[in-house]
Image: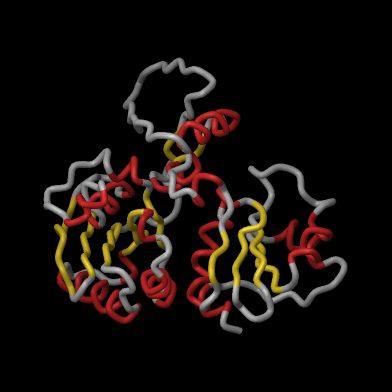
Length: 279
């Protein structure tokens, strides 16, 4: 199945108990069937968007990948990854559909947990209208905030601790060009895919099928960093992205997700693809 070329996972034949089993055992669900069936099966299982697994519905013809539940909690990203099958991602969360950042997206980009989850409704509502500053506070300190301030806490020592590869591309870049650029840049830095923790780009690139397909094809995971996080970082190199209102793409995206905020390779251009690597 073409879906398994974009995402790894188990294949479960449909049955009356399939959704109940998947909800209890899996972190995300891709349902290849009509939305109506999925809605009826999910209704008695849904509890809380913070704990329910994200659900994406794909039609039998692989025309659409619909982020049905848990858009900010993995479904939007999963739908975008499925663009590698040729399916069009259908994303209806207000911030993403209007090209705006969200608290959840920012938390994912900077590898944080949201401490006061109830704040996200008010903050996301404001983000629909205008940008908000992202402020990093180093402790020890005591911070008192209003109800409409989202507090993000850094995750302690999760997963690999490798390098972050930031990627910028021209429009409609081919996946082959992106893969070649990644491999060349890593080789020049005497690194391999085993050394890569994450790939990163700006959220203006989140619908670039060639970029998504390239990262998926080499077994990587890409995070699209929101505009406000990108613009909170001053990269060392000038960028054509300034015409899009961004300080850059590959350098600030890599720095935003890095642990030491240290560029070990400044932006380099490889045939319509820019790469920067941070640690």
